[in-house]
Image 1: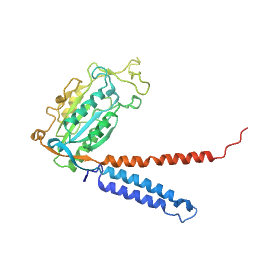
Image 2 (image 1 turned 90 degrees about the vertical axis):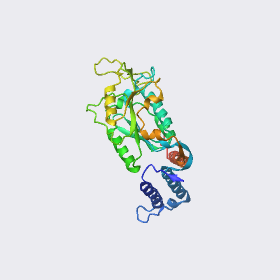
Image 3 (image 1 turned 180 degrees about the vertical axis):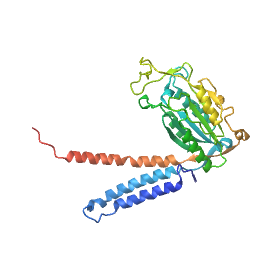
Image 4 (image 1 turned 30 degrees about the vertical axis):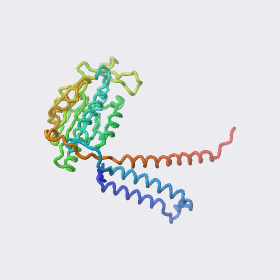
Length: 341
C-alpha cells in the first residue's frame, strides 16, 4: 500500500495529534472554581461522544493521506504528467452561443473530460477564476473527482461580479506549477486554459508565466455574434441587462480571440477555437510534449482508497447533529411557558 497525501504529511500528523490532544483535554476534570466541572462531565455518554468526534477527524485525516494500492493499468506516457485545467467561470461563460443555445461553460465541461480521458493516468488539477482564482481540485489521479468538480461549475452570479481579468489565475497557476516542479522534478506539466477572452477588469491583464509549462493549449469558446447570459440572481428566464447605455436591453458577450492568442503566447502553447462539432484531436496537435509519443506501454495503475475512509467518517458523523437537535428539542419542550392572557 502507498500514500499520496494532498498536504505535507507533517501537517496532517500535527492535525491528528491536535485532535487527540483536544479530546483528552476536553475529558479532563476541571479543578479550579468557579469552572469546576460537574460529575456528569465525565459520564460514559460524554466520553463516547468525544471519542466518536475524534474518530471522525482521524478518519478524515487518514483519507487526506490518500492510501491506495497498485491495480489497473495506465498508459506509461501519460502517467508521468501533471495536467492543469484553468477554467474561466466569469458571468460571460454563461453566454448561450455554444452549439446553438448551450452555454460556453457546457462546452468547457465536455472538452475537459475528453482531455482527461485521452490522458488517463495523469494527475489532474482544476483552477477556476472570475474576479478571483480558486483551486477547485489539487493534483490527483482521481478522474471521478475531476468529473464531479466540472459538473458542479456554474458561471459567476452577475450580482457579485466585479470585473474579471483573462489572466486572473496567473499568479495562482504559477505557484501551483512551481510547487509541482519542486515535488516532482522533471515531470512535464500541461496547461489547458479554457475561456472566452472577455476582459472586464479595469486593469490591463498581467502576462501568464509559461516557464514551467511543457505543453497544453488555450481553448476559446464563444462567437463573434455573441450570446446572451442568464441572470441567476433574478429568475430562470431572466437575462443579464446591458446597463452601459441605459437602454435595459439584454447584454451580449462576444469572444475576444486577440486576448486568447495573447494568453497562448504567454504560455507557449497553441490557441484552438472550440465548437461542439470539433473533434477531440483538435485540442492536441502540438499540445503534448514530445515524450508522450515515445511510449504507449501500459504501466501499473493505482486504486484509490481514500473514499472508503471519507465515507466511513461521513456515516459516523451523521448521529452527531441529530443528537444536538434532539437535545435542543428537549430543552425547548422543558422550558416554562408564559401564562396566557
